[in-house]
Amino acid sequence: MSFSPESAERMGKTVADLVAIKSLSGEEAAVADYIQNFLKKANLTVKRDDQDNLQAVIEPLSDGSAPERTLHLSGHTDTVVPVEGWESDPWTPRISGDGEDRRIVGLGTSDMKSGVAVIMHLAELFNAPANRLKNLRIVVSLTVCEECPAHGKRNGVHRAVENEPGRWAITTEASCDPVSPTLAIGCQAHAVIKVGLKGRSAHSANPDHGHNAIHAAAKICERVDRLNRSFKEIQVLEWVKARAAASVTLIKGGSAGNIIPEYCELTISRRVAPGEVAADVERELKEICSNLDGVTATSKFRLDAPACVVDAKGPLLKCAADASQQLFNRVRYSWNRARTDMVLFKQAGMDVLNIGPGFNGQAHVAGEYCRLIDLPRSANLIADTLRRLDSSIA
Image (cartoon, rainbow, N blue to C red; front, side, top):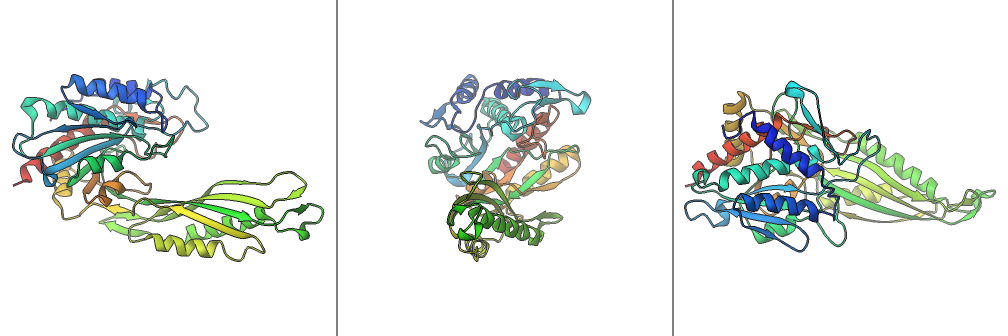
């Protein structure tokens, strides 16, 4: 065991330091400074690009520079904006609870500054001469704009995989629950759909003289809700199941209280399950936007990668499962219905798995937290997985 239960305090201090640094999407420079200084103190050579993406390579003892021996250990450094409902300053981390429920509360603790902290401490561990792996080459990739693009920046994983092709990746998004860390075997993709509606304005005293864009939007909302209720669960692995989702998340329209609105805009969030492709979303969109009583609809959507699932027979999952059995006397799998950076590593040809200290269900909520005990637990699970994978390389 590389990380004792007592190491939770030191790792928790790193999480608290990261939380205290505001790092909304596009504003990651200050948190990149902190991470870069930490890694430099651990004698890593850190490359930093003009968008504040960080990358450091831990070379193995043998000649392992080839992509087929390379694994990305990856997390994102940005957070969402604070949602409503915070009862304390989101950027002032605080400790609450006791025993195994002792936790750090603050914006980004689960999504995913606890995961970033685990990567930092793993990098420190494996870069020490006594802990260098023999065959496995580790690329530490800490990237920007996972939550959303901003200020001309886009998700930094695109650059990470261009700079360093690889065979495997482990991301450290939240995968813990009260029992133990789980092995998150995949995630759904995310299609963001923008719909523009154009009707015809009129005086609200004569609504029949116009074509109401907001009424058309209401029809679309109802259709999206009906579509969401139609999705069925899909079995991914053993008892792990995925399920597509669709919901209207933003709407804007109208100009005055006495005018029939001519324009309205909607954003639809479509969570794409395994087996679904862009053509499926296009077909649904055509049906959703048809027959709107004189209102015309234009639409476009962005889907950067399909849903991804780990190779059930590959060495990465086997090594992680064996490590979990050894550490916790159990192997538990999970599925992420949200879109994470797993999809980009999979699209780049890598087998990918997620193991992280964040607490399931805590992303994007007020009072977000992670448990201190899950920091060394997750770090040990990843460390043991890497050692087993290293031994499996011929």
